[in-house]
Length: 381
Image (cartoon, rainbow, N blue to C red; front, top):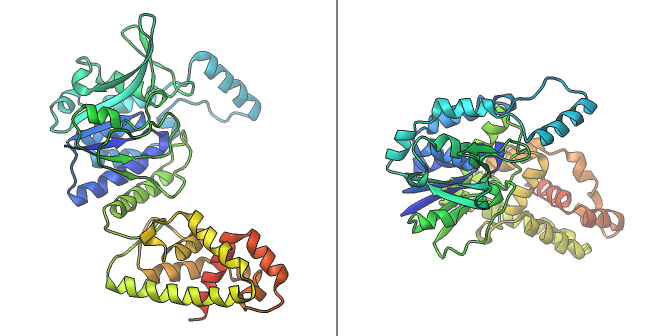
């Protein structure tokens, strides 16, 4: 059986909606969904078949729709407010409760062909503090909403959830990526979605075939819910999932596949290498500078030809939320890049013998240097 494992991460959870959209297009349906914190909230909606509702929700809510905050505090008032929040046990999440009340159909969740599970942490006089990894079948009747809110009760930001005399806290304090729960529920393979949330992320000793989807990009702040950020994250999650299933190439950008793209990439790479060879003939140390910058960018082995172009595009601020051909990404970089940035390396890029100062500057600004080399490569075509 296939399991989708959704990590916690607050407002970053919008990314998981894009993942689900891609999975639906790919025809990949899990038998099991497990989640922690916001991953459990998204997971419940996905289990109920409410992906469109989840998308609309993320594209319409802001922070005030999740937690209750006072209006327009001065820095001093904000300090006092946050101090009182901690003393009082956390922020009021009544708005979030209202969203869950409106969307959750517990009977439908229990009847779904997809089995659902979540993680929270219980604190009681009888049992002390203990992790609770629960399938929906193990949650008492009528209590699913409570346990969902318990899984997302990120103390001290949010208040713990009271259930039957015990306090429950965010599942991230126990396991922020619950593949162990998925295995216990019968999973034979795992698809994990990690959104870089706070909490404990255990090593995967499940022994199960595992694919992990995560973003190259910063997904934003944990507690800042913003429709604009959510829209961006949804698109990132969508393309990252297509990449994980081999439908697009790239590391930070989604690049089309096909023989035409392979040829265009080979042409770019050959011209980039020629420019770099000219530079390093006079400044050999810059070969290592460029190589290190590309390696730190983090491409997979089969994506290394694209890495200089993608790194340059990132430096220039090219939009990562759309699908590109190789030429379109080149064009987008050229349109966004400031040529004056390349002027800082003028003598190095020209391969001049006396380029000492520029070479030193290139060595201490490796990513900007690679972007300048890419710009020169495109400009000389």
